[in-house]
Image (cartoon, rainbow, N blue to C red; front, side, top):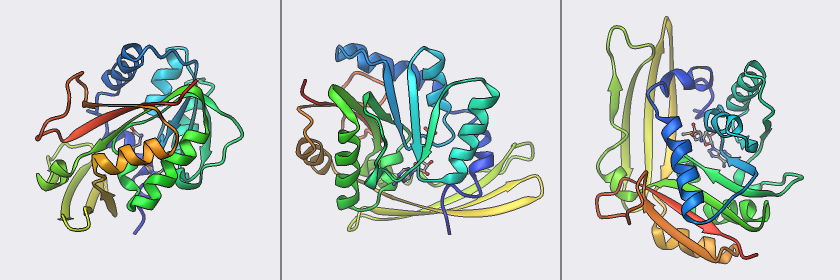
Length: 244
Ligand SMILES: C[S@@+](CC[C@H](N)C(=O)[O-])C[C@H]1O[C@@H](n2cnc3c(N)ncnc32)[C@H](O)[C@@H]1O
């Protein structure tokens, strides 16, 4: 069963309470903290492009890509409706081959956890690095193993007036570090399912992959703060920078 297929037209409804504005502000805070000032940005696994839109509205020149054709269809539709010049591509992060390079890349909302092998993670970081100009940055978040252990995906909204009802149940295997989440959705009279699979990449794996891809700086934060992660951080943000 596909992920980010049937849900694509309803994704923004599902994300209605997600604070993308705050995320855009946090991304810019991390740029400032690391004395980074990109003009051109690559949104890695951009989904329906909500963060790309906010950053484009702030004056960045944004290009986004995503594996899901349905998510990119939504992103393109929204950009046209908002008259935003955002270029979108359907592409796989693990084999990315776009014509341009960018001063910064970012990936939010546990997108890289959807790459479910260590080899895939390393390929994605390697390919993204090749699309970043010297001195440029890659800032991304990841769900931690702690988040999966705490069953963060076990969620539901069955309220009568919910715009989209859902019931999610995750099954986490700490040996493989893989979580498989069965997701049931109901919108008006339409009922559909998706299965989402994520991997809890370890900090050591991520740092090794970043170093091997050529990044020299690697900082990590407890998400949406400037604090170091702690044992109960469920999401972390990495800031990785290429040499000049
Ligand atoms: C949770 S969504 C986040 C989307 C967007 N970043 C946001 O903040 O709303 C994860 C996205 O990652 C995409 N994705 C998963 N694996 C990918 C891959 N190998 N290459 C590109 N995109 C991928 C999915 O299609 C999905 O749109």
